[in-house]
Image 1 (spheres, rainbow, N blue to C red):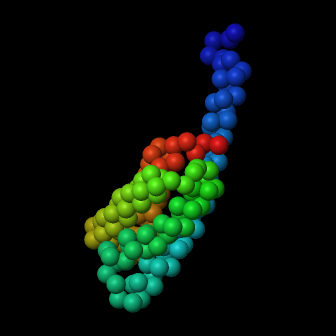
Image 2 (image 1 turned 180 degrees about the vertical axis):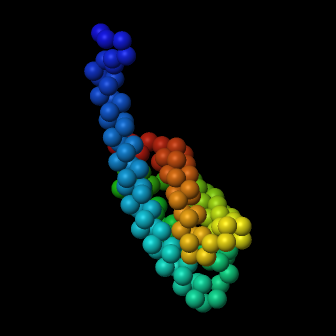
Image 3 (image 1 turned 90 degrees about the horizontal axis):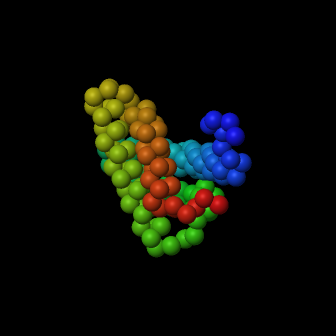
Amino acid sequence: MRWGALPMPRLMTERLRSRTLRGQFGRFVIVGVGNTLVSLVVYQLLLALGAWYVVAAPIAYVASLVNGYLFNRNWTFVARDSTRARVLYVGVQAVGAGMTSLLALFFVQVAGTGRVVAFLAAAVPVTLCTFAANRAWTFPTGTS
């Protein structure tokens, strides 16, 4: 066997794991884009109604929570529904909502961006963090 070569079963297992991870992340991003669109519509509606952007951001984020849970559980991670998964998902999303508010506040107050741009900019790191948390904690066996 060449140096550095992997035995065939291990190589195939790693490729399958890698393909699964890429597929999950791709699906998570698609769900995330949908959730971001839902959030953006709710956020802009709340702003139009006079809500403070720091309050509007987490409300908009929560508006996409049910959609995200259903699509991520059923399609992204293919995991069973359970009370544990629901509680962890809500917890991860709550932290995500807090991160979204803090980042939106930072981008508006410190970086001087507009409120909508701040919300969209906050969505990127929050999406990466919530994918990692949901994959590790909420749906850890959802690798099929």
